[in-house]
Image (cartoon, rainbow, N blue to C red; front, side, top):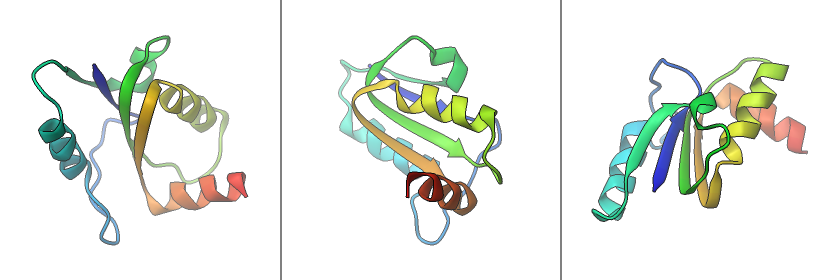
Amino acid sequence: MAIVIGANAAPTSGIGGRQTELQVLRELEQALTDAYTIVADTVFRFKGQSAPAVVFTEIDFAEWSPSATRRLFVGLTRARVHWEWVMSEAAQRLIAGRLA
């Protein structure tokens, strides 16, 4: 099973030539066979569950907060083999700053 999870309810679009969530989902859908299932829901609905592959979408926050930390932890620890994340430029800068 592959799980696709989103942090927020509002859809986002591609930024600076990056793939949009829809493009990522379409590529994932094409790559999967009928033996797999795609589930889409919020981060916290998947707490305690895992999947071989996760696409973590709609990562968009302007400042680091305990809520952002919890969402990232839950979302990024759901994948057993591979994960992808789709985020805003602001979130990318904040995450890169924390990892540096």
